[in-house]
Image (cartoon, rainbow, N blue to C red):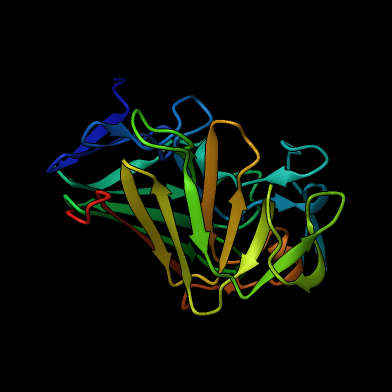
Length: 266
């Protein structure tokens, strides 16, 4: 464990939080490690945008801004996981982290994230604030759930979206909404009543992801992982469906994970 890693514990649940990136590097429930390990995996916050930004270009109020194309030809998953976070509060089972938005982001603002762990649940919060001029922003979470635990069968995901954003050849929504299609998926779905997805590792664990956010990306193409990503807007949404953040109107997001054993005992 590095000096930047904070351990949260509650009952048999344990989380490792890397303050250098804001990522969860591990999440263990009893004998089960729920997240895929590795430098680019675990679970990380996405802000000030989620998913892919087309060609790494943001157009806002008549100006154009360019960002590093870390998923060529696109920029992906925002900027906050690339910078360290300051600890604003901490207990044995909770932590609050904050980060000033930094270049290449051109607008002054900050992101705060919180995690609170109990023996049966984890509650996540994220807030994006503007210091002066308004700017478009999104926020969300990108967990890499392990496809297989040390016992039980392969992960199954159950969710009921209202629609699917049709994915173009560049892996971005093309503006068409279609009925949800079977996988494999690297796709964005609309859930206007809030995100709810149940993840089941048969014979081992059930975990439910809920959020008042209305969008979720499901990525199940990797052999060892499945991603279920609640977020405040669709990929490239800063350009296609912008939500302005102002000093008076921050963007606030929340997500809850709740788990139980197959027999229903939490």
